[in-house]
Image 1 (cartoon, rainbow, N blue to C red):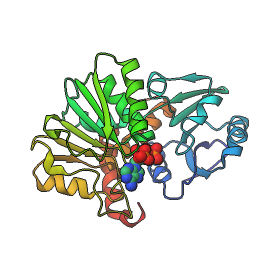
Image 2: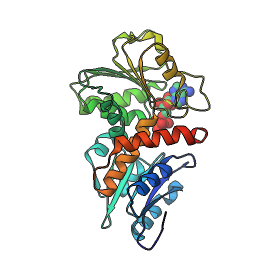
Image 3: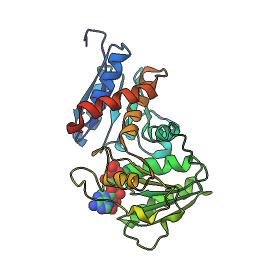
Image 4: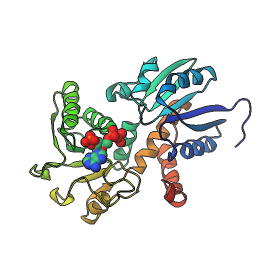
Length: 290
Ligand code: ATR
C-alpha cells in the first residue's frame, strides 16, 4: 500500500471496535480496486461523537461506517438519509460529499443479497425473527419491506418485541405481524418458512447455547443466524443436521461492507466474487480472530 498526499481516508467509529473485520475487508477491496484510499477504525466515546464528525469534515474524510452503539445517534449529525436508513431508523454508512453528510444503511441490503444469491424470495413467506435489538430492527423492517405474508417477533423482553411490532404495523399494516416471548413453549412453529436469529444467543463465548429448539419447526424451514462468531453456531449446526437450509452471518457481514464501498466509490463492484474471495481469506487466515 502506497500512502501519499492524495490518499483518501475512510473510517469506522464505534465502541468497542477492536474485533472488527471491517478494516481488513475495506483495505483488501481498496487494494484490489487500485483505489488510493485507506480505512481506519476508531474507538470513540459518546461525548466525542460530534467532535469526531466535525473533525472528519474538517480533514476531508470521504466516508465512514458507524457501528454499535452509535447507529441511531449519528442521525442527529446528518444532512440527508437514504430510503433504507430512514426505513430502518439507523445508519451504518455515511458518505461525505462537499461537506454534506448522507446516511445509508447497508445491513438490510447485505442480508437481502445473501438470500438473493441463494434464490430465496421473501415474498408471501411466514417469517419468525428472534430478538428485538438493533439487529432485529434492521432485519425485521427490511423483511417487511420485501412483502412477506406474516412476521412474528419473539424476544426475552416482550415489551421490546411489542414496540418493534407496533413500528412494523404502522408502516406495513397489510402484514400479519405479532409478537411474543422467546420462552413461549406453545406457539406452533411449523407454519414458519424462515427463522432468523437476531439475538446474541449462541455467540462466542457461549457457543453451546441455542435460542430455540430446531425440531419444533417444519423440515423445510430456512434457518438464518446473523451471528458470525462462531462461523457456525449451534443453531446452524443443528439445522444442518436436520437437513435444513442454514445460513450463517459471515456472508451478510461481508456484503454490508462491500455495499458501503459501492456507495463511497460511486460505482458497481463485483461484490459476489469479492465476497467469496474475502470469505475464503477470513475462513483460512482469520478464524481465531473473529
Ligand atoms: P444487536 O445490535 O446485536 O441487536 P442488542 O440491541 O443488544 O444487540 O440486542 C440483543 C438481542 O439479543 C436482544 O433481543 C436481547 O434480548 P433483550 O431485548 O431481552 O435484552 C437478546 N439477548 C441477548 N442475550 C440474551 C439471552 N441471554 N437470552 C435471551 N435473549 C438475549
